[in-house]
Length: 219
Image (tube, rainbow, N blue to C red; front, top):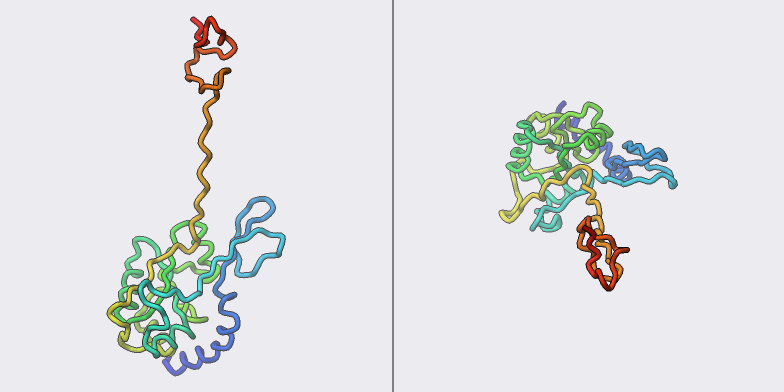
């Protein structure tokens, strides 16, 4: 597809992206009444527990605010943010990442490793292809440098890096945030009849504790 045609496509979706990018790039984790977990790009009803997983927001790189980037880069990243989806042991992902860093493209990276994350990715990319990227409302499936370059050109990103030397990309984040279970409360040790903790000795019978047998030990 020619760059001119790509530019027309991006301009044609600019208004829709501005109004509905958040919903188009959000996957909802829905827990049904039976405990079954599903994923959908449609918001659940108010009586259905869910967790909204935003996948299209612009993440500012560590140490570099978006507003501090060169105007040309900031304008492109604001109108057409790039979110990059990767997985472990993916050579094409490494190649695509190097290309984005070399060209100076700010991006948010999401890792896809679990079955639940694969299901969530398929809501955006039915084929589940990795690497995968969203550029505004456009989808880039698999990595082809010529195709990605044409889309980035059409979106207004500089052909060569204009990022400051202090720029550092934000660390990759899992597509589905990890939920840390609360720690189980420490077990309390039962007390003897006099209020002191039991020794744990199976030969100790609390009801045998008497003035004449203060230890309660049975032989």
